[in-house]
Image 1: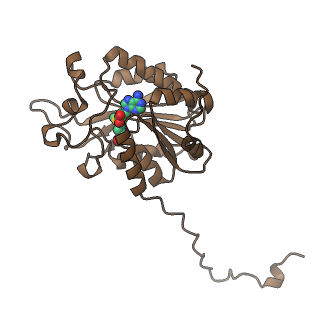
Image 2: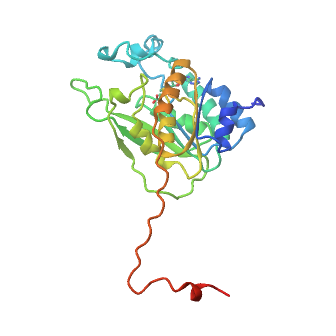
Image 3: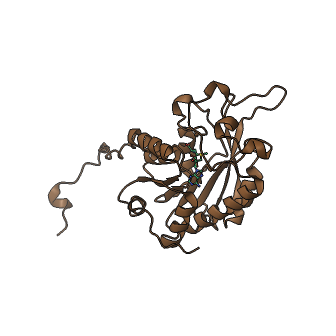
Length: 284
Ligand SMILES: C[S@@+](CC[C@H](N)C(=O)[O-])C[C@H]1O[C@@H](n2cnc3c(N)ncnc32)[C@H](O)[C@@H]1O
């Protein structure tokens, strides 16, 4: 791949630390290839929720809209369908390896990756992650709680997965993190047909190393970016559909920014530790 076109100025501004978050309206593989060529190793974490191409067992099912595949009748028509969700198993694996490879070259050594998947695509997600050059380190679980879709006589479809790993060796630093995240989907916090809960992303972003710029090439309604802004982190998102970009921009405008760190409180003096008189404290 040889694509020397620069990334949009908004992305370069985030990388330079001039602003915290940018959302770019564009195609992920195109933008990732440009990032890999023009700002290699610039990003410090990849956190993303790509189209799963998962709904339906047969080719004819998969070719339907995402609304037909993923939305219950009680929610019909509330949120727009999205593209990129019609690949069959082989082409999904091939495409995933392509974009994961470009993303790997855009991320610095040691950068963590968190890749959302459902049960049906979890084996392909971990294969593609490794084919793209990342080290696969595990599957974390998003427990969607008992609010998830029930099935009579079957297990509830209650879990999605986060295939995670790193770009090469990963330093054993930072906080101890959970392997299961339990958050329900709430209608008030759902801005996309397959939008993730903001508290889930707030928790997942605890894996981001200090100072790292997060990359989300399939931003959807921008939940990763909103969580990044709320935590005072830097992040860049790519999204193919204009209405999702507009939703992300509106959410970012409304997202609370973290409070600045409080000034240190004056320390009470213990008896007998009064400051020495000025003339004896001064040197020379
Ligand atoms: C599963 S959704 C992400 C939802 C997101 N996590 C949220 O909470 O809103 C995947 C998104 O990827 C976008 N997408 C699909 N193919 C794309 C591509 N080739 N380039 C960029 N975005 C793409 C879709 O429009 C969709 O919004």
